[in-house]
Length: 398
Image 1 (cartoon, one colour):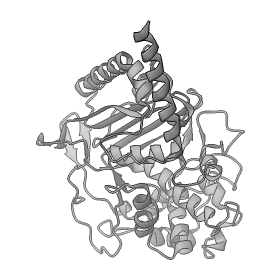
Image 2: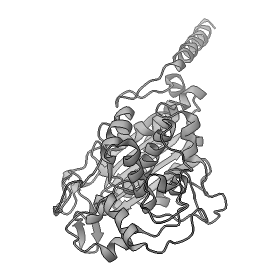
Image 3: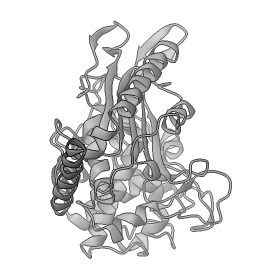
């Protein structure tokens, strides 16, 4: 009886001590994650089983689906699994990928462009319902707002198609300003009128990068480094910029090269003139930096919750044909409570899923055009055969 009595007292003391720590704002430094040790001690067996399941699941993906990249899975405030698979130079099968390697995020970049716009909004420097021509007066389409761009409701046609028709020298990179000039000069027909319906197209977030530059007075890549990545502790993240480059190199100078996979093998993807356009893509990062961002969203340590939560509000309530879209995030229709974004561009694929209801985060970065299949990712995230103990409310915000 005495033994049980002292055990109960110890648990109570530990719990009260933990509650006292909830007022602190812990920062993850890559080794010890901010977690509720009391609840983890009670769920060690479930945690171990979940880790084993993740190991088997992604090893099978590596063998059967060609997963070549890095996986990070976190649940309940701690990283349960982090593993690298395959090669940096896939065509020669040399230089093993490491967990701290940087990958091109493709369209996962959009959530960070949205974050920059929300930051400027929080500083009172722009309003979501401002007409785009307030910042880009030469833009030939009236009635498009910042919010329309964020929600993919501008109705604009693809800049890639416009560039394919009118950008003559493919060895010269096209910038965001060049892209804007093409719309001014050729005035292509829009897909639809502004704010009529959802239409996902990269031009929306490329134009948002133009807005960031005009409002902040900084080059987009510098603003992102100084105002977003550095405050978030994302020290291994950057925007790939071709600013000032007059002639493309054959390949991007990065350790992890991107590949197209064909029946004949892996073909290294060359640098492309469209890589000079930023905002919709061209961010490089690591799984650990992305998880720092995920923790900041939970903790409200970057933007106030009142502003951050707007990113997860459906921008097209009338849209019934699939996932909705907030500010840089897709809102899952088939998986309630989950927000996500996938990316695919020039030899890279990326996957970022946050199942907020179950405090699960899955981040997968790959350097192949096929990468891993999105539905397979959901299969793992939605697996409820192993239930971890629910941590307290303040732990969920870490």
